[in-house]
Image (tube, rainbow, N blue to C red; front, side, top):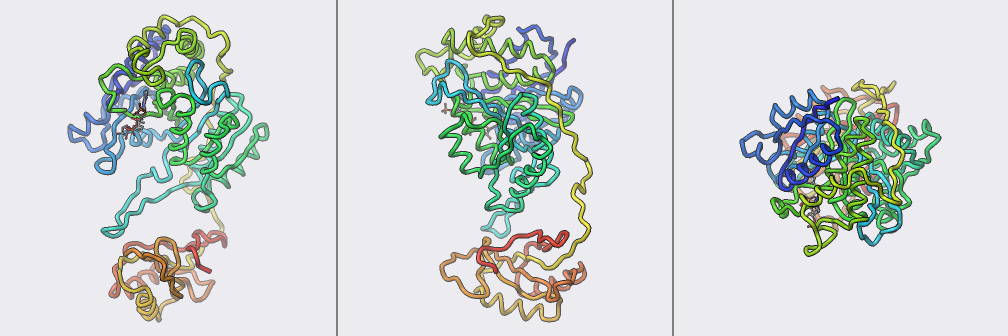
Length: 480
Ligand code: NAP
């Protein structure tokens, strides 16, 4: 059969690494009709703000599978990353990033059998990209984590462990600090793990995960984690096995899959024909396994091991400037080694990945009881904190709430004083209901706003929800 697959060469080194990959995959005899599509820098330059033209979207919609080179994103300004846009448009919620020692690639970890996989949530967290300047000098980025998103990625991690015959899934979170958002990942993990009693489930705080990855990486099997944690840990992981040139990835969703390396467009190497195409090639290998083409996938993997280890043919990143071959020559060697087997490194047993089925209901978690028992209102003001307290207390005298405390950047400043805090011009005022059973109505909230807004400029409001009597908010540091 012939597969039709969308191929996005990408920016910078993209066309060099995808050309090499395409040549090697074609040489296996798997018949692929590559539909070459644009995305990234060239599209931004044409004035299209998403960086992804409609023809590319249509192509992926039709083909369901894409192999993608890296796309450049402006750093610290400009339009959203086209990479992230593609993952989001096609609901590719799982980012699978294997980190496996590669024979012949010299690293300080050689011989320690590093072989783990990072399963990174791909759509939520800080990468939801919901950012607002609260004041001219204070930026806010929402860390959005849903129970549904956690459940999907955690089930995917366990299913992935089963497909690859792995023994342990470790959940890495920062739930000690972000108790509701990262905590949701941890709690969901603990619940779902009970359904996978054949697999050991552990939790680790993500900073220690980074430490342990450098100290004893061979202890890890599958790591499941939130988006930003996973992004950082996987770059770290790639350095353990020889660098970003060796780290492949797959973006997996229920209906679409986009295969791409962990690395970016490495602009300083663009056009030099000296970059390592292994990461994109191995992403192509993951794609072949996704298609059920296990034989071709194993053949490429074996040819890679023979080329790197038996023949010692490597690119600049691991061989240095004098002994390295070009990207093109590396691909030539891979093609000529197809059909050969490495003497000691064999393919692991891969079984088809069973994608988890998770309810699509947007109201994924239902509660029996809910109550709004207060408000956090965020103000832009440089007034003295004690003045704000006195003014607002007076303003809300005739309302169902009282002023509980004032904080700035999550630290309580009032009542009481803390002269050591360097306050910024965004402060949070927490109002709670005077009668603890009272459920604040929207009309009452509107009235409170009307009473306070003549005094200070407010920016946004968070309702303090109790869901089934459990607070849906956390305390500030120093709050009773
Ligand atoms: P990068 O492109 O990943 O490159 C960082 C460094 O990693 C390179 O300077 C090089 O290290 C090494 N490297 C990357 N790819 C390599 C390869 N194939 N072979 C050998 N070494 C490789 O990261 P960046 O410079 O931070 O980002 C550049 C652009 O890429 C940015 O616009 C960024 O937004 C974008 N980006 C895109 C993706 C994606 O498409 N999914 C991912 C990450 C970043 P040495 O300097 O040590 O040789």
